[in-house]
Amino acid sequence: YVQIYDEASRPAASAVVKALQAEVGDTLAIAPVENVTAAAVLRNQRRPAPWPQPTLIVHGAAEKACAADLAAVVRATLPVLPGRDPAVWVRDLPRSLKASPGVIELWIPPREADAKAAS
Image 1 (spheres, one colour):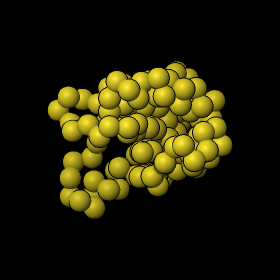
Image 2: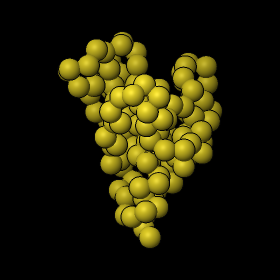
Image 3: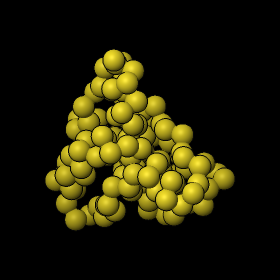
């Protein structure tokens, strides 16, 4: 899953999806990019707090090696914005959430916040 927080991040997310598909082909199923802020508004839910770095969330230990490989593709594809570390974090799914084996989520920080911070 590829998650964004604002529409300004969609082109970068689409570029990452294309790069991942080119790298691994059909072995990786990627759901459509989701704007989690817009989804939360539609569902009348609290907006998620954004990750400060591009972050891959693994749902199980078996996905960690794959996530590390994916992180390299994400790092090479996403533009490094001013004031942002180029690292891509790999984190475990919080224990309070239900894991889905084989799932890795990519959370891309909001680009609009970077534009406001740079101005």
